[in-house]
Image (cartoon, rainbow, N blue to C red; front, side, top):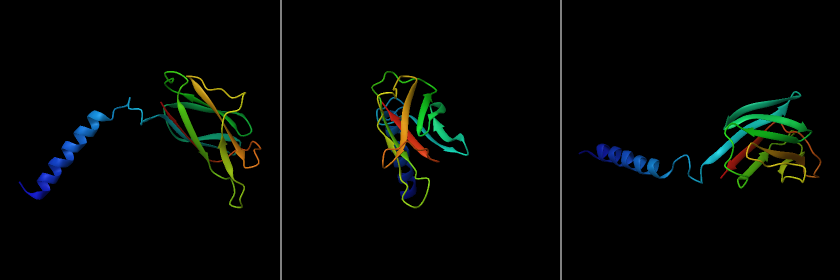
Length: 130
Protein backbone atom coordinates (compact mmCIF):
# COMPACT_ATOMS: atom_id res chain seq x y z
CA UNK A 1 0.00 0.00 0.00
CA UNK A 2 1.43 3.35 -1.02
CA UNK A 3 1.65 6.38 1.23
CA UNK A 4 -1.17 8.08 -0.71
CA UNK A 5 -3.41 5.03 -0.25
CA UNK A 6 -2.63 4.91 3.47
CA UNK A 7 -3.37 8.62 3.91
CA UNK A 8 -6.62 8.24 1.98
CA UNK A 9 -7.67 5.28 4.14
CA UNK A 10 -6.79 7.24 7.30
CA UNK A 11 -8.80 10.28 6.14
CA UNK A 12 -11.82 8.07 5.42
CA UNK A 13 -11.54 6.43 8.84
CA UNK A 14 -11.24 9.79 10.64
CA UNK A 15 -14.25 11.09 8.69
CA UNK A 16 -16.31 8.06 9.71
CA UNK A 17 -15.39 8.47 13.37
CA UNK A 18 -16.18 12.19 13.43
CA UNK A 19 -19.46 11.64 11.58
CA UNK A 20 -20.58 9.12 14.20
CA UNK A 21 -19.68 11.48 17.09
CA UNK A 22 -20.96 14.83 15.82
CA UNK A 23 -24.59 14.58 14.80
CA UNK A 24 -27.30 17.19 14.31
CA UNK A 25 -28.14 16.84 18.03
CA UNK A 26 -24.60 17.64 19.22
CA UNK A 27 -24.67 20.71 21.53
CA UNK A 28 -21.85 22.36 19.60
CA UNK A 29 -23.87 22.50 16.39
CA UNK A 30 -25.91 25.62 15.69
CA UNK A 31 -29.67 25.03 15.83
CA UNK A 32 -30.32 28.13 13.73
CA UNK A 33 -28.39 30.96 12.09
CA UNK A 34 -29.18 33.86 9.81
CA UNK A 35 -27.47 36.68 7.95
CA UNK A 36 -29.93 39.51 7.31
CA UNK A 37 -30.11 43.27 7.24
CA UNK A 38 -32.41 46.22 6.81
CA UNK A 39 -31.63 47.91 3.52
CA UNK A 40 -33.81 50.07 1.30
CA UNK A 41 -36.71 50.00 3.78
CA UNK A 42 -36.91 46.20 3.65
CA UNK A 43 -35.52 43.15 5.40
CA UNK A 44 -32.92 41.45 3.21
CA UNK A 45 -32.48 37.77 4.13
CA UNK A 46 -29.11 36.71 2.67
CA UNK A 47 -28.63 33.20 4.07
CA UNK A 48 -30.17 31.15 6.84
CA UNK A 49 -30.57 27.77 8.47
CA UNK A 50 -33.74 26.90 10.42
CA UNK A 51 -35.02 30.47 10.10
CA UNK A 52 -38.42 30.95 8.49
CA UNK A 53 -38.47 34.74 8.48
CA UNK A 54 -37.27 37.97 10.08
CA UNK A 55 -39.66 40.82 10.88
CA UNK A 56 -38.71 44.37 11.77
CA UNK A 57 -40.67 45.29 14.90
CA UNK A 58 -39.35 48.86 15.04
CA UNK A 59 -36.15 50.72 14.24
CA UNK A 60 -33.27 48.47 15.31
CA UNK A 61 -35.59 45.76 16.67
CA UNK A 62 -36.21 42.44 14.95
CA UNK A 63 -38.09 39.20 15.53
CA UNK A 64 -36.47 36.06 14.09
CA UNK A 65 -38.88 33.14 13.54
CA UNK A 66 -37.52 29.59 13.54
CA UNK A 67 -38.60 27.04 10.89
CA UNK A 68 -38.45 24.28 13.49
CA UNK A 69 -39.11 25.51 17.05
CA UNK A 70 -36.49 25.16 19.76
CA UNK A 71 -37.06 22.46 22.40
CA UNK A 72 -37.48 25.11 25.10
CA UNK A 73 -36.35 28.65 25.90
CA UNK A 74 -33.04 27.59 27.42
CA UNK A 75 -31.10 28.22 24.21
CA UNK A 76 -28.19 30.60 23.79
CA UNK A 77 -28.01 33.19 21.04
CA UNK A 78 -25.27 35.50 19.94
CA UNK A 79 -25.40 38.24 17.31
CA UNK A 80 -23.14 40.74 15.58
CA UNK A 81 -24.11 43.85 13.65
CA UNK A 82 -22.15 45.59 10.92
CA UNK A 83 -21.69 49.36 11.03
CA UNK A 84 -23.67 51.20 8.39
CA UNK A 85 -20.83 53.65 7.72
CA UNK A 86 -17.05 53.72 7.77
CA UNK A 87 -16.74 56.78 10.02
CA UNK A 88 -17.12 55.20 13.44
CA UNK A 89 -20.91 54.90 13.61
CA UNK A 90 -20.70 51.45 15.16
CA UNK A 91 -23.63 49.08 15.53
CA UNK A 92 -23.94 46.46 18.23
CA UNK A 93 -26.36 43.63 18.88
CA UNK A 94 -27.57 44.19 22.41
CA UNK A 95 -29.06 42.03 25.14
CA UNK A 96 -32.81 41.69 25.14
CA UNK A 97 -34.76 44.34 26.97
CA UNK A 98 -37.81 43.63 29.12
CA UNK A 99 -40.22 43.98 26.17
CA UNK A 100 -38.25 41.60 23.95
CA UNK A 101 -39.26 37.97 23.92
CA UNK A 102 -37.48 34.65 23.69
CA UNK A 103 -39.82 31.75 22.92
CA UNK A 104 -39.52 28.34 21.31
CA UNK A 105 -40.86 29.84 18.05
CA UNK A 106 -38.86 33.08 17.84
CA UNK A 107 -36.33 35.38 19.45
CA UNK A 108 -36.28 39.18 19.51
CA UNK A 109 -32.94 40.88 18.99
CA UNK A 110 -32.00 44.54 19.00
CA UNK A 111 -29.37 46.56 17.21
CA UNK A 112 -28.13 49.86 18.57
CA UNK A 113 -25.39 52.44 18.33
CA UNK A 114 -22.70 52.56 20.98
CA UNK A 115 -24.78 55.25 22.70
CA UNK A 116 -27.60 52.64 22.94
CA UNK A 117 -29.92 54.35 20.46
CA UNK A 118 -31.84 51.78 18.42
CA UNK A 119 -30.50 51.71 14.85
CA UNK A 120 -30.87 49.46 11.84
CA UNK A 121 -27.95 47.74 10.18
CA UNK A 122 -27.45 46.43 6.67
CA UNK A 123 -25.98 43.23 8.10
CA UNK A 124 -26.83 41.36 11.29
CA UNK A 125 -25.64 37.81 11.96
CA UNK A 126 -27.44 35.67 14.54
CA UNK A 127 -26.48 32.17 15.73
CA UNK A 128 -28.55 30.00 18.11
CA UNK A 129 -27.16 27.05 20.12
CA UNK A 130 -28.88 24.54 22.40
